[in-house]
Image 1 (cartoon, rainbow, N blue to C red):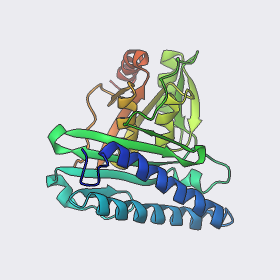
Image 2: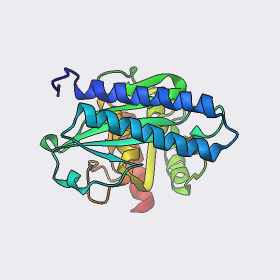
Image 3: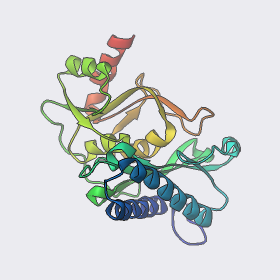
Image 4: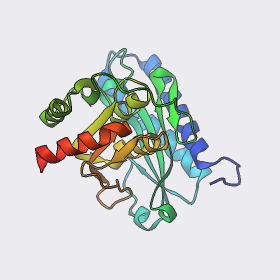
Length: 255
């Protein structure tokens, strides 16, 4: 969709995610890492305020669902809802030298019953991947395949799946970085079991799908967004050829 400004939704998502990322880099440079908790709090707040102000100005008729904002339940009846995570990987953002954090901007539209535009900015890598085609060709699968996993809370479930398919585990920070690592050739799959918020999953799922990756829940069913609970129960993002063996492994393990 283009508005009176002439900027389509995918271009807007990429622009806003990139600009929010620049803001976060400037904040990181200015505050330093002497007080990581203060830096993290400031990053969450300033990026949220920037994205909310820009979306209000450029898409005044839309509703915004943000991790850092109050849940406006009018979104459940709205035609267009922006689902944003102003700072995905807040913990990593507060650690000096870490690059595995992101900014997520995604648009859900009722007319399509799904996500129609999205961007994931990786500011510390000066990279933004988006549904307007700003992503590299999907690289070859690693040998052995690499499964992205949480570096701080590694679930035993992912280890069991990896063993079933002969994969190795690759610790990565934020959810957005885990998903985008597949497009960057640093991982081949990302699976998550256990509830995560929609702002964690929406933009990465949309960008991954646009790039041709497999994107579903762990039972193979489609992901849903703009739900009342704002939750993604589980998800699988992976190279297409890995989908069948990974889904089969999950079924064998969890039934």
